[in-house]
Length: 124
Image (cartoon, rainbow, N blue to C red; front, side, top):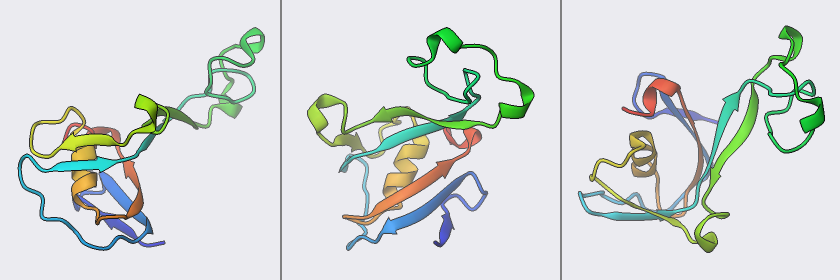
């Protein structure tokens, strides 16, 4: 799959999973409705190399160096919040996670994409 560098500095990378149709011309005040999932790569929190906090509570211990590979942890999912309604983002009004607005503005209507945002890009 082809990766696109959104900011041309390796901070936000985009992979198009399903192409869209029309790319809107975003203006300040435009509304974007979309679903999202946010994952973070975190250090494992138990001896099994998991990042969860519910299972294995009795086994919980600091991971050793040999299983300290970061694991993917779900942070937020729009389909699980607010009765499954899409998230609404108003373009140009200093949204807290600026990288999300940049990602949305790079998309076409109906497009499904995956983005990799480096830590420094969150507050671009």
